[in-house]
Image (cartoon, rainbow, N blue to C red; front, side, top):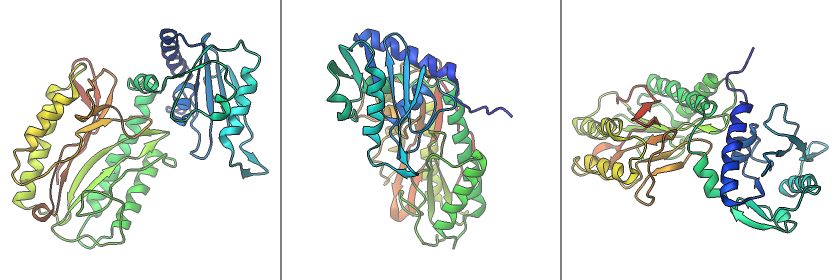
Length: 369
């Protein structure tokens, strides 16, 4: 039976072609990536957090993959293995081990004058052996990753679908007296069942009557608002959306008004966001809408991109000056907080795909309290 989420080699080759165009613009002879997300983005396989794979792309379009085990399927011309374990014991020098294998593979090639690397993590084991000039291509890689290809979008949609099942489970079980840990366990189980495998990651907020945080050994109380911010990751790709559940099912007028104010941001998003629109403008419009709720506070971003990392570009945040691009997948999360009056607050979050003409809602499940 075929796996619809299996590694898409042609899609990976397409991403390599996009990186090659950047390499030509920057006059690079070689690009080396060592972040697990960038290795996956280019070659296909995803490796566990304790391993240190690497990939190198030459200006001729030849990709070398160095991984801790044999990759049965990968968009690589040379697929090499480093010794990540000795007699089943994981080595502590993973980065050095993978670097030595990569250096050996590059030894017979013409020396590179300009080499693109990720400055935040480039191995000193490689740096000390590279004769060429090192150029930081990490910002370029993050920029290239913004446009999600169909194989990436399929994995994101699967992760987002898992949140829908998690929220359905939450609405069925949240009642006064339920323990936050039991809610957490049930939601994790629902996501694993929906994905059919172990999750790459999970979300942030499972604590009741506070703005966020991990679950506690605590029973929830009548009248509280339960903010759930869930982000299961499927094969490396992170969902991120939020819902609020009124613990006793009977929100006060004040809580309902706060919910209406926050939910009212989404029609503006769906009417206004499209490729080319400035994120700062959207933030300011949302801030004005949230400001209509008297006595509330909101001191956070409006959202961010999602993908192989929970927070990516574009940034719906005045500390950046991003513009939306077609192919962005974004999480939009307006909120209002008033601890005493609201018993925490309201934060709602939807996921959208940005297109040239607008947005497509990806998290189409109930928003209500």
